[in-house]
Image 1 (cartoon, helix red, strand yellow):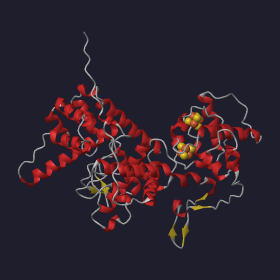
Image 2: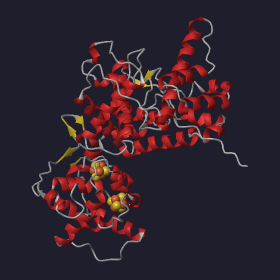
Image 3: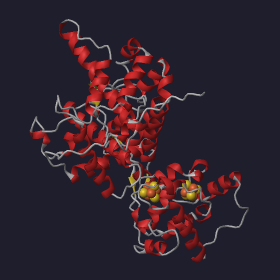
Image 4: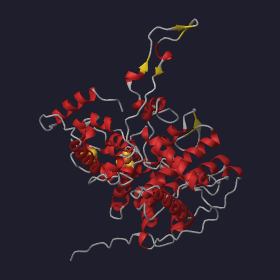
Length: 463
Ligand code: SF4
Ligand code: SF4
């Protein structure tokens, strides 16, 4: 007779977290501000889609390691991998888990994730199951307290990334009742005027805050990946909070601050850590790519036509040498050939109905099959031109726009349901009906696409 071990009931079946009544009001405007900061920060790091994908990758990792069946096989290497994704615990907690042993840690995790006791009690029990001893003296007690906080964060992240819809993120950087600090403070207007906020760090409070934030995200027209959007906006808010408190940059374990660093860069750093990845360049060291991008924000850089840049190699004015980039001037560009109603023309064509919704996050271009082989293929840019009404600029790209292969990656990822693939079709349709047919030539192989694209790019305004 074959015996099959009964799978444990997932805790989620009975973990229905009823949101508490919030004892204070969160502020819509503050939320939108942090969401905007997040979107700006994402530009230097591959777009918001890259951020979301990081969180999905973390979810996959946690699923692989902590699904009920996988827990039986948990070993030391798995524990190291798991801790690697929990930045507030990764450096501190590994020796504790090694001392606990893989089997006992797996048992504690099983009870946490699939046990029947109330959720808050299971989280406390997980921390208590680890061999963290107070020891003698202030230093030893402080060390034990740090380890317990790290264990709490591990429990919180395990729950959230195993089931992001069911469990809000209950880490200390979201809200730490003991120190009255965390991202939630950033959504309360006037919080900087008081040291106390009546927010309890219990699942019901986290859930209430999370539901409010999910409503705010959806109010911005985002309906996909809402739990992860909430995480990311909270990460942006926490980076802002930390900077306001310390004037510095987050250490990877929240214990130190260093360097000046702009807020956008800091948001990108904290988002990277929240996704469980190490920050490029090490702790407290600027990410060179971020700094370079900050020197000239992407939209400005792409909108300057080199023909409008004036620069004299050798120039002395009133005895002062202002040669080279010191004397750079940008000639004004007067635009008169735009049609503010053009987007309605595209809306009226099949596929173009939602073109007005675009908020220029760049996720479509970032995910685009054609962009991967030809960086001149840029759906975000063409949607931008459409909404501005720059038909003449669109016509310059008539030889590229039709190359869309209808893979729909852009449509799947677009947070505003613009359906960029449809817009590409509508634009191609419009280009045909306006009599601006593409140049004759072989329909693309990859090599031909590149060749035709680069020749077209040579005559185009930079983007
Ligand atoms: S079409 Fe969608 S994915 Fe592309 S930039 Fe606009 S909002 Fe972002
Ligand atoms: S459908 Fe077209 S625009 Fe969208 S990702 Fe695919 S190739 Fe790019």
